[in-house]
Image (cartoon, rainbow, N blue to C red; front, side, top):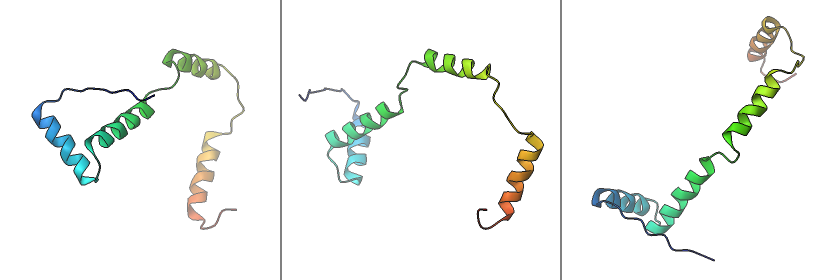
Length: 85
């Protein structure tokens, strides 16, 4: 079910949004819905504390790694080749 949302804007904000919507050949309502959807997608999905706990836990693990000097040399060598090997 759709719900109605009322937002009060100052005149300059209203004009800016109206201009932005027109430039994209959209209604103001469509432009606002799109802007809200994009803002919602940028919001973190999970709790930030939970994400940090996972990262801290992983940092204590002993993962196998290569020698940093060798890895950097291999990366640089790869820049010079035109085809993947």
